[in-house]
Length: 233
Ligand code: CTP
Ligand code: CA
Image (tube, rainbow, N blue to C red):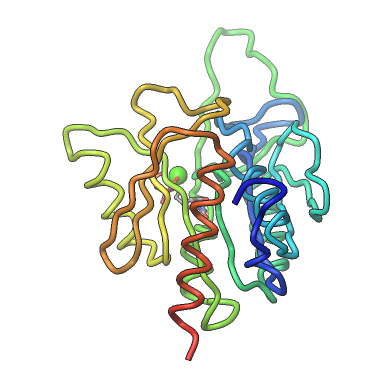
């Protein structure tokens, strides 16, 4: 699926892609955020458009130029990301959650800038958990045949390997595909390259060799197309 010779195998389909990292504000100038650049999500949106899909890209704090031929909705917080994704997903054939939503937000955000106290003490910030957008899409699929794809950046630790964590996450989330990045080396963020394994709900694992985020994007859409074909009566 190289540019110029791309198959139009997503023509007539509507897809939603989320990208970037959400911010949760502590006060008007400060937030909790993460290192997602949005590059993989943008590559997914671009690849889907090239293959003929009608694409809505929900972008959280991404500074990349809007891809041509894609409807882009810019958001900041996880709540905004969720609203925009669910709205766009209502008529979608596939939803790919490449965004990194902040898992927690401050229990309350200050309307005014938090000031340092005179006595040198530090503020205590209570966090509450954000809703899981991907899990919500799985339990309330927009349509029974909507393909739901998640991404996971994992590191191996004492509790298990990258793949152990990824398999458990796929089972927990119940999505159709989970694209797994090993971020132990820190090489993925902001990079143009990516290396991944695509896990599917039936236990399959397809390694994708190190290559461009665009190449990985095309592999993901190949798998989405295959799942849709397999589901066709
Ligand atoms: N995700 C989501 N909503 C959230 C958190 C994550 O939709 N509030 C989606 C991400 O977009 C991604 C997938 O879930 O597609 C996996 O994200 P990840 O952060 O790896 O999963 P978590 O369940 O948050 O697990 P962890 O504790 O490892 O962060
Ligand atoms: Ca998370």
